[in-house]
Each structure stands twice: as C-alpha cells, then as structure tokens.
Length: 309
Image (cartoon, rainbow, N blue to C red):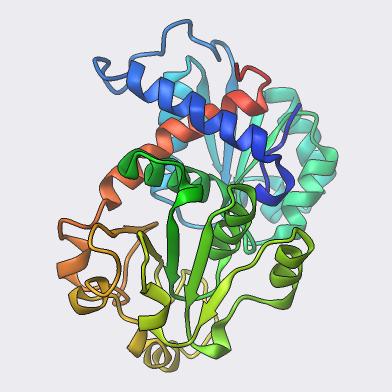
C-alpha cells in the first residue's frame, strides 16, 4: 500500500513511472468516449472515497473521471455530512470505517495534521487532493503537461513561478528537486517561500532562485506558472495583499521578456494576477493543463493500488 501525500516523500523513480504510465494511457484513450473504461479495467470493482473540506471543481471532477475510466467507482463526501464533522467521532474511528467500505481515500483538507492522522489509521491508501502545505496531484500533472508541450524532459527547461508562496509552489519546489529543473520564483519579499521549505531544498543539495523583481524572475523562462493571489480561505487584508502584488501581474509585456517560445500555465481559478491577453492567448495552455489531471491521477491511483506497471 502506497500513499500519495507529498511529492518530497515519493522517489523520483516512482514519480517518473507515474508520468510515463499517464502518457501511455492518454495516447490509448484517443478514440474512447469520456466514460468508456480503459482496456483491461485495471481497477474494476474498486471504490475511491473522496472527502472535501474545501471547495473543488477540477480535483473533484478529474478524480471522478479517473476512477471511472479505470473501471472503478467513487463516493464523494463532505466532512459536515459525517460524524467526523458534527458528531464528535474520532479520526481513528472514521478511518477504520472508510477502510472497511472503500479501497482508497482522497482527501482535500484545510489541515496537514488531519491528513497525517488519517494516514496513521487507514488501512487503505490516502491521496492528498490539496492541503495547506501541498498540492501534489496538481503539480505532478503540471510536470506532465510541460513535457507534453515542450517535448523534452523538464530537467532541460527553465521554470518560473510568479505569485504567492502557497501549497502549489511548495509542491513545485519539491518537484524541482525530484526532477532536477531550475526554478525561479518572483514575488514580493514578504511572500517568499518559508525557511522550512528552503532548508529542505538545501538538504537535498539543490537551489531555488528567488527574485523580488518580476522581470529578473522571468528572464530566460521556458514556462511561467502562476496561481490566484488571494486563495479561497486566505485570512489576510485582501485589498492590501493585491496591492503588494500589483507589480507582479503577468501581462503581454512581461511574458514577452521571457524566452520566445515560453508558455503560460495556471492551476485555476484565476484572478487579477494575469491579464486576459495572456490567459486566453496563444502562449496559454491552461485548458490542456486542466484536462491532463485526469490522465495523471489515473496513474497516481494505479500507483497507490499497487497496479502501476
């Protein structure tokens, strides 16, 4: 049984195997309809239980399609529908019940501690669909998308992140270590990655490059990533934070200072951090990026269920 909680805890070899499998599976689905099952129905009879403590569009739909296309089924729960949410049942007891009824558990949570507690008491795999410190399924899919578009290993590319230091960036930093690519980060000084993350990078003999000048950050970039400056449950002075990121908006003028064939990716939903001209322009591949989550999450499920070949 294998969990999928943080990219930093999974070997580079296994992460690469997931991407290779996803590529094969995507190619084999070209003539199949949305709910047609992959050849061999590799997860026939298996059920994935999903629980959402935070709002979700892409994670919810993509995991639903992923397990369906593998021949399995899914049940989606909200924590306030369970005794866990209102009846005072412990995580340990809830985990035992979930392990009895399902074969895998995907959780989107507002607590890193909660996902670790579930891991300790589940006898089925747990997948992190998003937590405060990590969004591993998103970022592994993003690595897949970059290599699909650029047709070369991500290790040969210069990757740039413009925006807040959040869970997506933390996972992107972990990916930069696992896949050995150069990562430049552009953000105001107050919003730089935390010491814990930076110390982990140093411990693994890698380096990330942080710039408080957005033009220096995007110089020679092959890919520019971004995310919404104000996240769903951001407990800050929103007006003030938006003002602090005013100089970090990704517009046509900025993206034209990167490499000529630079592409733009965004995990969605978007805000004012990117102009319509960039987001809807030829350099943007955000819809392909969103679709690829289905393919990569199928291979993540197979990894967790011990079926990855």
